[in-house]
Image (cartoon, rainbow over all chains, first blue to last red; front, side, top):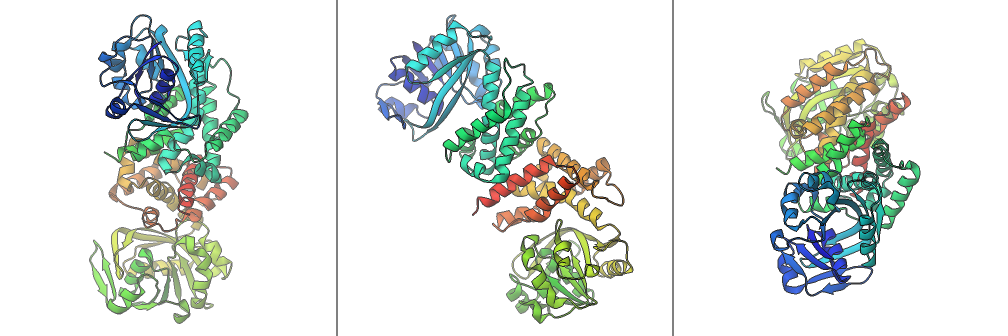
Length: 306
Length: 306
């Protein structure tokens, strides 16, 4: 499969590397890592085994990539005003555009320019950071869940899930994109924001009784809002929260992407992870009080950098 | 009047200096400023006029002070485990003990050791910081409100208020200590915690729409809880909040004491300003959701220093 990776951050580099190792023809749009990858290839450090790709097709401009079978979007959602422009040269009538970006609103941005039947959304459960240029550190997990933006379980997403799984990316095809996106938000909303705001990794937040309780309350608010979004099946709160807390405990001292973004003084994905979900929740009559407060604190500390 | 000042931080130094300038016999228990004040006196920098007290009675040990007519307590509430021990040598049967400490629970600590009829509580509306040792910077405001812990408007507090006012400390005698303490919390709870947590001074929080709205919501929670504490007269929410926001706007880029404490890696007055008010609110059936979240975030970032 001819694949184009738009947004070669940790997620794009890691999944792109696995797909290339699995025999696919992968083309990466790169900024920070272009020079390093062009000269010495891409190094993947992973508990599942390190590997090195000597010959990686890296580009500075997506026009040089041209049409592909699959666009894999890993762009930070705060850069979404460039998403259509970066993606357009890769899209032909038969192209599938898969966005694995965080939060809500990404498929909608793609749908302003492309046929919504070409768009697939997905969420990645991946602990992964970029290291020095040309190296990506896979820390834990890595599975993804994908679903048609158009809705329903299609042969296309089932085929795509099989393709991913064959290359070592556990992938599940799902019928309800809204549900998988909101399920991911149940984790992202508390941990991304709290870690970025406090500068504490996940284990420190879980070991403090006050913040552990706060995390549970935030998750409950997200689930209450999610269950008003017309999901095919409700998220069952106590069990789902317990599972999320257990998974997080297993991640040890994890620094979510938003915490890393803040430490690097990069923008934060506040619209995708907070603003748009808060709007959807408010429209459904669930105000998500604590989530709104976390968003306010992140906005205030973000604008203080100006 | 023979006066002993326990806890000669910014508040104790400033009010003690005004009382001494007004002709009272003031004795200061000091730590940080002892050496500087003993050798070169106390300098007050104030928009109402700078002044210098050359001869200041400073002590390292409150036993050297002995009994006084009035104990003025300005100790940080996080040091309350020392409060009784520090105060005891100053207390005779006729002594009035006035605590101007922040938050709730301070009078109760004094009442474990002293006759509750000797205890007066008060709140200070004072923008004041310590400068280099031997200097205190008065920035703005300075009025205080005092009331009997025992309850009711007594001749004693009216006399005390008159004495303070004569020395240039605008002072109002009030009948309802619970009300004046909770009114002060309406300001302290949002601004002390949010400034400490975000590292932003008051003006930055007010100019960000999300945090301005959050401040209003926090104040509303505190007022709702306050109005369940059996106040003699309810706090009227929209008007009181509007006044607090206006007063704060006039303070410009103010850094509340808790923000300074955090910047100096000192302990925070979390029990007096958050934990005890949250307990009282919960007992009254008003959970103060956002206040609890702010407390959790402050606790988590506090324990991270350990």
